[in-house]
Length: 114
Image 1 (cartoon, rainbow, N blue to C red):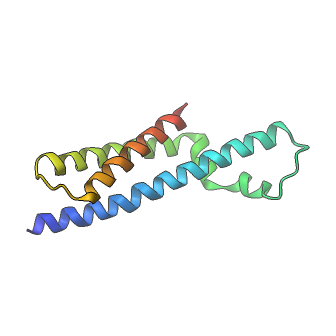
Image 2 (image 1 turned 135 degrees about the vertical axis):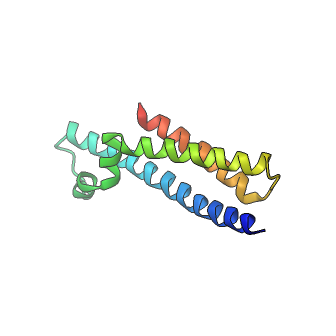
Image 3 (image 1 turned 180 degrees about the vertical axis):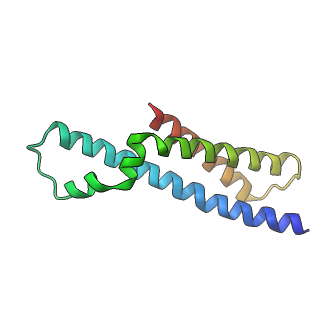
């Protein structure tokens, strides 16, 4: 019973963490594309030019740290959710959401790696 509550709290944390990571990586990817367009075309006007330049999400995407964080976090979430589903036979919706978010984060990390 104690382990079940620990797993529930762990999966709740993973649910929030993986969704936050996916959101930040999507924002960083968009800002990196926009910053690249503004550098190629300096005559283009943008009111958010400073935001694109100083955004930590964009910097993490460009130096590769975001893709590593996405891939490692997705691997941990994937293995934990499959272990909880297969070995413990806990078929709650939260486990399947963590599994889907893990696959999404892995895909985003793979796209950011390119």
